[in-house]
Amino acid sequence: MSTLNQVAGAITIFSKYLDADTEFFEADHDVIYGPCQDTLKDITPQDKKKLNELGWHEDSEYDCWVSYC
Image (cartoon, rainbow, N blue to C red; front, side, top):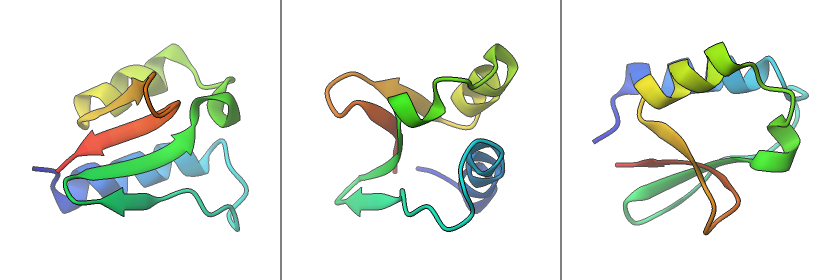
C-alpha cells in the first residue's frame, strides 16, 4: 500500500517535469495512475530510481507511471 510520503515524494518528482496546472493523477480500485511516459521522456535516471524506490514504475500496459495501493 502506498503511503502519504511515497505519493508526496512522487508528486515532488513529477512536478519537476510537468506544468503545475497539468492534471495527471487518476485512480481505480487499487492503482494510482500518474503521468504518461511520453510526458516524462526527459526524466533523469536518478529520478526514475527514486520513483521506483517510492513504489512507482513505468507500466507498458497503461503507458504511464503507476503505483499499486
